[in-house]
Each structure stands twice: as structure tokens, then as C-alpha cells.
Length: 337
Ligand code: PEP
Ligand code: MN
Picture (cartoon, rainbow, N blue to C red):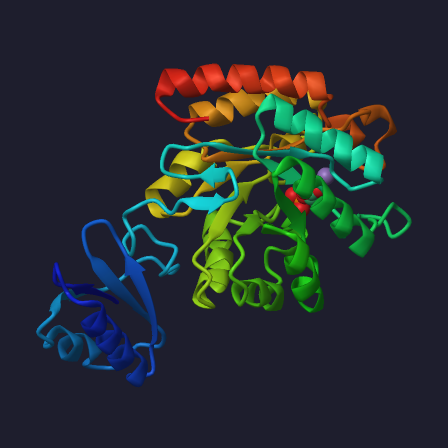
């Protein structure tokens, strides 16, 4: 249910209502909108709560939330959620670009990458320190050493660091270094991990599982939101289909579809979505055209020698050119990039 407070309701009365909601055995999520404050009351439904809540003076009305993803739903919060971390801004008409290598490989590699993507206009730096690899024999990442190198790159460039966390027990460590915690596609339905990042107050970039439906994707986001972390970025990174010409199939319709249903920012990853470097630039421009709030792009100073995902990584020059194209599309449509 959504408890819609009357215009001008004081903070004290909002908190009092939130407490009433909790006393009924429901969880209260207070959401401050531009127009008014609402309390999303979620949990198992019993009888009579709606009438009881509606009887309070400062409550305008109580309406049911129809979507199964209660806090992520636009019904609960019509205003777009805008993520701001350092200079990285995503949502509400501003497009944020996160770029960098698939994996952190060395000090030289990550420092060069950071300088180059920053020069081209990125405001976020990606780079995996803990890598989920299909084969146990592939490079698994530099782990904590990689996190330290990312922090050093941030120190010099000011870029916001986006990096993956794979297990609940590593959340505390990764959160010490990261500005945004990435949940990989393989972990989209790792519910304990989702709850663990939900307990932090760092923005979470949640990747869609390659075979997850939109509803499963939004319910995964709900696990994070349910822990009180309101900052979730949804990332479409392609799904598995019968097609083999690209690594995955990248459905850009996800952007307008999700936009109708959720207030959360939506980001596209055309690198994993296609797996082919030459397809990345056009898909970046197309993502901006369909209204994406951000992009996450793999860029490597020397893609041929990358330890992971070299075939889909852009050279720094190709990335700079891609940014130029995206800026033109953004300007034409009135978005800020
Ligand atoms: C990555 O970002 O390098 C990655 C492993 O992505 P995904 O989880 O989408 O496969
Ligand atoms: Mn990768």
C-alpha cells in the first residue's frame, strides 16, 4: 500500500505514520517526492490496515500498489531517482558514462585507462578486481590489490569507481574502495548478496541476468531497496537467445519498457551486450536515443592484450569518437551528457 501524506505534513507526523505502519507488522519506506511524501507499506497483507491508516488526520489516502515490485514501482514514486556520486550523475535527463577495462590488470593499465576515459568525458571508472569468469582457469582478478589500484586512479582523476562484488562476505571490503557496487549478471538472483549490498548506503549497479525476465530483474532490485538502500541502477547487458552472431542479444526496448514501470535509472552495457567492439559505438548512440540514463563501456589502452574481454573493448580513440556521437544524439533529444 502507498500511504499518501497530505501536502505540508510535518516530518514528525510522517515519522509517526511510519511507526504505525511498522507496528502493523509492515515495513515502512518513506519516499520524499517533489509534490508530497508517501510511505510505501510493504509486507504480508492482513485485514483492515488500509482503513486504519486512512483514518489518520495527516493521511490523504491509502492506495494499493499493483506491481509485485513495490518500492521500485513508479506507482510508489513517480519522480525519477537520480544517482549522484562524485561527478557521475544518472537519471532525470542526465546521462552518466562509466568506462574502463573489463579487469584491473596493473597500475599502468588502470591509470592509463582512467586518464583516457576521463579525457573523453566519462565520469565513472569501471574495472573488475574480483572477476566472475566462466572458466576457473581464466584470470580471476587482482582482488584487493585491484581495489587499491582503482582507488589510486580515483585519487588522481576524480572518477567514481564502479566495481563488482561477488559474495556477501566481501561487501564490506569492496565498499571501502568502491563508489558504486556492481552486481554481476550471474549474481542477479543471489538474494543474500542483494540483501548485503542493500544494507550499505552505496549505489548499486544491478546487471540483468542473461535469462531473467523484466519482472525478475525488478524484483531483484526490490531486494536491495527493501533493505533501505534507495540507490539502485538497473543495467541491461543483453540476454541469451538462439542468436550466435553476437555474444548476447541486446534488447534496447528494455529502456522505454522499464521507464514506464520504475523510477530507477536505466543503464546500457553494449560491450557485453554485443561482445564485438565494432558494434559498441552504434549501440551506445542508439541507447542514448531510446532514453538510457547511462552507459557502461569497456575501454582498454591495448585491447589486443587485454586479460579479459579484449574483443569487445574499445581503444581510447574509438571511445572518444563514440562519446562525440553520443553527445550529438543527446543534444538533439535534450539530454545532458
Ligand atoms: C563485467 O562487467 O565485466 C561483467 C562480468 O559483466 P556481466 O556480469 O554483465 O557479465
Ligand atoms: Mn567484461
